[in-house]
Image (cartoon, rainbow over all chains, first blue to last red; front, side, top):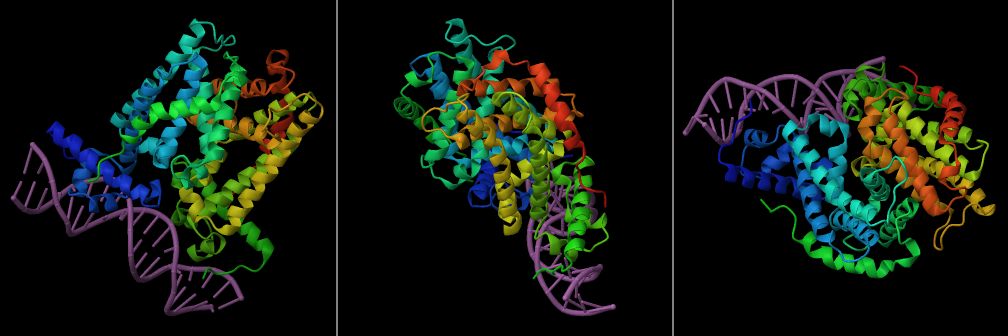
Length: 246
Length: 246
DNA sequence: ACCTGAACACCGTTCAAGT
DNA sequence: ACCTGAACACCGTTCAAGT
């Protein structure tokens, strides 16, 4: 049986240190694959056994890190959600925030991809798996609230068989697919340097919103202005995150 | 330096055996993560050194397997491409074929995801990386030909700044994102059992086509009939593939 | 009660030795 | 010229022994 840690404050702090060490490993070049319990332990003032007391496996640690990323994304969404403008502009701002969040640190997106991998999910602890699902739920609820607003005020009337959740899932699929397929662009660039990805991402999102018939349609929105405003609103939220160094 | 194999026929056959062994490993439960050079060697009448003569690393082997999957998808696309109907129906049929191909064996989709992973790409040999890019190019060319037809005959007029490649990329992003986010559904199901994924997938694709203004718009197409016809045309192409057993 | 790190089983890759 | 498998360095996980 894994050792147990009693003091809750220490526990949290130690987890921050452990995740921070793993994050350093990822950032220092090798990607998620560079995370090794051995190497994490070497960077950290605790023993292997203690690390295993906090995380039941390497994949469990990775899942916890993914959860941390999602929780920062939630804060970004919370800031983006009362962007002033039509519901469509709000939705665009939310979608764009997702891209900014991913672009600000490729690590985040890769951790989420990794956590979604069957191999990782199979080895994650129940606790962190449940936490992950709850966080995704929060994220989705935030997004859906904008969609519900749009439906209520008549700017969006989903086709029969599609509810707010379905709309969210469609937009989300497009966002995720676009970033995933252009992942190397996310990797290669520092913040704000990948013009191609950004243009494709916004085009794709608008395509879906147009397909949904979400008023007002594409051409009446000034994208330049919107992205700039969105960036300004969201940037401070993005900067303030990142695990502490061990 | 890795040993070299001279006889080309033997070489091909041995690669089939090696990839087949790896495929068995994946299918027998553990997913792509279950592939181990040790375990592959145990299943195969060659030594470790010989395996490394064919594939420069485990990731190189995985990439080669991904390439094999893409090549089977190309054959499926080739069968789907002269589906009779409007260009929009053709595009739908191609997109649907992609889903059928993935659903018929989750292994395929997972191998592609794995091959796209930065860690895998970094360790794949130049040869297999180039092969992969060439195959994706073939696939894209096939898809683009339908889009060009649609543009030529006026059923599709892309917005300014978007060409056939851009249209293909948009549809592709949506397809990939949808399957990726519902991956567990792909995993859990035998062929043809995951109604949810199928419905969401077609809805999403139609959403993008509508957003693109690809005529005729959504509601005038009988999806039921289309998917059935598409399935019939494509099914034999899908069945005839899979690596030989060692 | 909590923590340690040696020990174990397994993995990827190489290469000296064989044929 | 081609192939083998022992050898090496490293990895994830456990757990008897310490405090």
